[in-house]
Length: 155
Image 1 (spheres, helix red, strand yellow):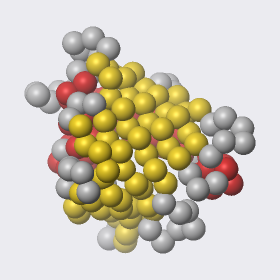
Image 2 (cartoon, one colour):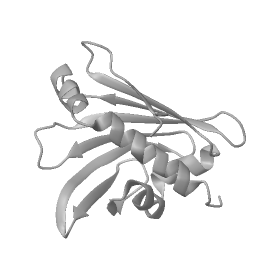
Image 3 (cartoon, helix red, strand yellow):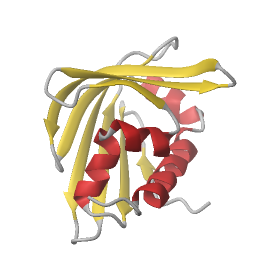
Image 4 (tube, helix red, strand yellow):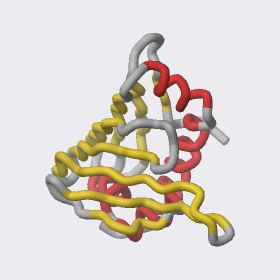
């Protein structure tokens, strides 16, 4: 699988910067991150709650064979359509503390856009622990699914 999503983890910094260009209009890319129905399709997760507004919250849950294997939640601090989402992100039932995510959506052309996700962690150690997992491969896989599934949607 070609890696189009770039994950940058500078040494001794408690952050990640993830970038990806999509062959999607920025409005459609933003919708893929904010429409519960679309998000469920490309992330293969259930959206239990999604309040796309300042001080809103969200809950995602992934199950396999009837068992919950992943659950995440957070608070939305900024929600500017087609521009940015600022949110906290917490993986439940893990040792990882809450992180802060800045998602920036940029129009490149009428049919292409760029997503930049800036993630801040409590410590370098937690960031490094995440990078030891198959995180980079997973987000690339998810973004490839997003590109394939969402390209056929109308705005």
